[in-house]
Length: 211
DNA sequence: CGGATTTGACCGGCGC
DNA sequence: GCGCCGGTCAAATCCG
Image 1 (cartoon, rainbow, N blue to C red):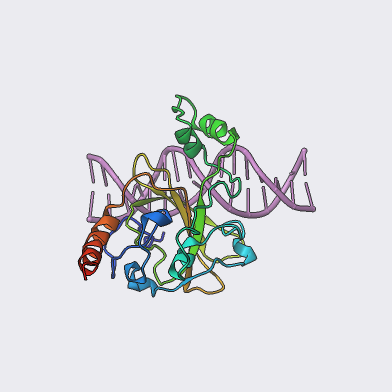
Image 2: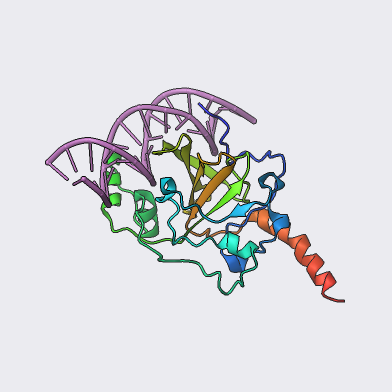
């Protein structure tokens, strides 16, 4: 029983904002990153223990944004590679309606469908907290011990009813101060916290641009 | 009491 | 074909 992983519990020592939307949608300035994560973004690990999560092709756009990459280059890597899909997400995206009956049958039907492709990206943060406050609300739906790692991998889903974004969180066993977060999908709803944070910044930019 | 989390079972993919 | 592994489900439990 570990009650530490509480993604939806707002009280954090330094509540902040972390970009989870597509690059053109965000202002990824270091000031928006919670200080609890020490602004230490790094490239995806090539650790073979995590190759299933952090495919080398995964686009680490957050790192690139923070290192000054032009946003035009920060294109979402849609359809990078086929990935397995959950029954629920496939059914939701295809507009399937859940049938009455044995849930095992439903799972089987869903998983037998052709895997869809979704944007997927990962990044690392150096933090004592496993869960970063990215402005969205997440519900944990699973936790799994992974091979060659003493730390479990946690699975989260966005709680917004029409949103199907998922994320995985795992702490590196090689460097226990590093947390690897993998996002899958794109939010189809606004992030209230993001807008709250951006509004004063935008106003300030508008004000300064007058001079 | 309702929503979130925990956790064991289940399933499909993949390598051998 | 079999076993391992990652990902998901959902009942049980927790908690505000």
